[in-house]
Image (cartoon, rainbow, N blue to C red):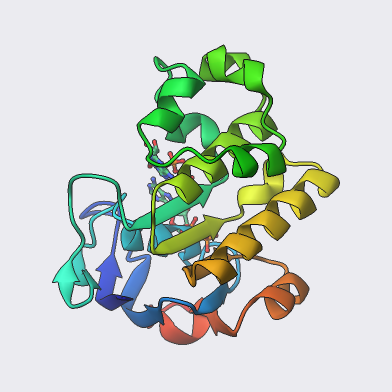
Length: 207
Ligand code: ADP
Ligand code: ADP
């Protein structure tokens, strides 16, 4: 599979400035891509567009040449820095996971998710605990692409490393495509097969 952002331009509304102009990029399954670039250049906006959470103002996102499906479990999963916004507040965590697909005990254990957390509502968990559920849900979904946007800012250093190691193991075993937004060029170098600098592909006039 391949995901392609094709000539994407974006602004949040008609009277706001363009955030992205004529941005194109392709990611193949099995590739691990780092997305870097100065703050405010549109990295988060681009990954939201490429995972279907925002519609591009111009251009399109194609999965094997076809538009992203609107329904069902998405073949592109986004994990971002606000896990509390990504989870239905009215569902117990058990239901959040059941709705996501294939439950896997060993992933739960590796992520340090405790059994009694399953009986809780999102508001009864910390940001770091919720983020583990977001990662588990994405991995259970049978996704082809995993996008991570500064997902570890909520987590302490040890947990960050634990979660990244597990994710990378899954990414490699299942040959998922990974797109990670990061400010950490060292991390990107360690994990990624290539790095894209948004400053170089965003044709916005002011940058
Ligand atoms: P990056 O991830 O590279 O830091 P972002 O995609 O978060 O960049 O933001 C790009 C620009 O879009 C910034 O100028 C930001 O202020 C603006 N922006 C982000 N979200 C919104 C929003 N909901 N409405 C209006 N402007 C926004
Ligand atoms: P920002 O990071 O600019 O503040 P938000 O966090 O408000 O933007 O994101 C906008 C909306 O996108 C959220 O309210 C949320 O509903 C949706 N969203 C983004 N990522 C996900 C995700 N992984 N799962 C579910 N919803 C998401």
